[in-house]
Image (cartoon, rainbow, N blue to C red; front, top):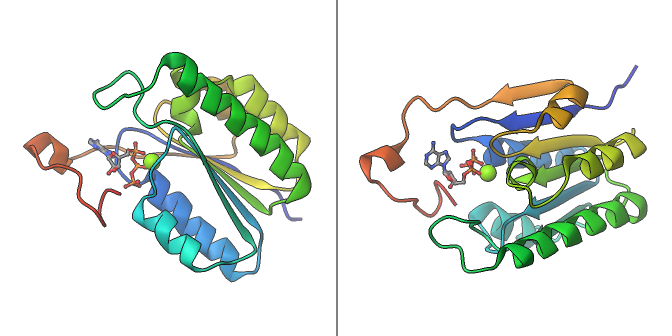
Length: 175
Ligand code: ATP
Ligand code: MG
C-alpha cells in the first residue's frame, strides 16, 4: 500500500531547505508534479535560480514573503509580513486543487507559524484535505500541530556552524 508522507525538517542545524530541494529533484525525476511554496522568502537562492532554468511544467515555484522578520535586515511591517503569509496560504489552497501536486514543499512554514505570521491549524486543514500529496514542512521550531500529524520528523542538530566563527553566508553554500 502506498501511503502519503508528511515530513518535517526542523532544528537549528543547516540542511532543511537543501534536503527538501533534494527530494524535489528526486520526485521530478519520476515525472511527479511538485509544488514548492516558500514562506518568508523574497530573494531567489541558487537552487531556485537553477530549478527555474529547467522550465519543467511539473514544477511550480511560488515565493510569498518579505524576508527577515523582527531581526536585523527586516524592512517590512508586521502587517506586511502577515499579508504575504496569508497570501501564501491562499495560493496553497488554490494550487492543491488546480495543480494537484504529488509532492508539496512548504519551505519555512514552521518558522512562519512559530513567529505567528500564519496559523498552523489552517495548514493542517489543507494537509488533511489533500491525502494524496506528500508534504515536506521545513524551518526551525516546528509547531506541535505539525508534529502530531507528521509520520517523518528529522531534527537537524547544529554541531558546528561557520556563522559562530564570524563567517558570513556565502553564495552557493548558504543561499
Ligand atoms: P539550508 O538552506 O542550507 O539547507 P536550512 O534550511 O537548514 O539551511 P534555515 O534555518 O532555513 O537553514 O536558515 C537559512 C540560512 O541560515 C541558510 O543560509 C543556512 O545556511 C543558515 N543557517 C542554517 N543553520 C544555521 C546556524 N545554525 N547558524 C547560522 N546560520 C545557519
Ligand atoms: Mg531553510
